[in-house]
Image (cartoon, rainbow, N blue to C red; front, side):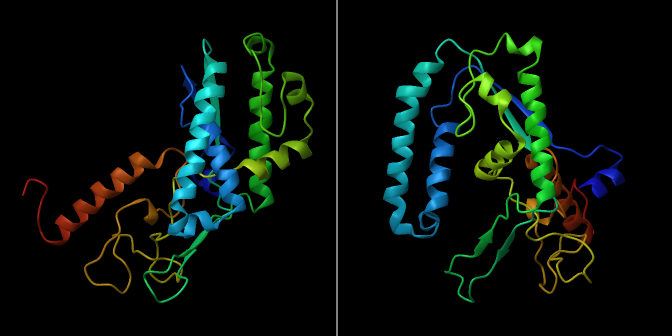
Length: 248
């Protein structure tokens, strides 16, 4: 995205999102990390409906773990969650049809941190967060540090090498559920483009797409506002094509 950011006149780099937590969500990140790690080892959990009871069991076990251990430990504390958002264009995933049968699951490849440039960008962000955390002004407020598989103390975090940080990035990077760009709009002559600039699906009469999937690339911020804008613009285009105005 240096090329994209250059066109926009902004500096390239990881986006930092700070979330202040007055308490730990009982269904929060520890559970998600636990379930994500398990599901990564057993992708069948996503694709086989008969494994739903097992998914529910894993979720319940994680919820119990957090409510009995994590929340008890967090009483009387304030948590600060730092999220590194880097919507890179290098590691781009794909969604493909697995067959001509609509009942078959699609082939989904998220291709997370597959490109080294994206890994290095996230490494830059992780080190920046570490520098802030270990700065004199912040360090005195840090009661403890626990980074699964990487560090259990401030000292261990400070001593973590770039190789250890890269390994942590590759092991823990996940999506923030902002799936997008799978039916991107653009020049209809481009074989990879699904929709034209008016959101109309190529080769299909009377069909438009009005959600995050038409984005040529994912926005740096949350996709909610951008998706609302796309929907509003789609309504305007439909009205215009039929010679109508909003008030009508």
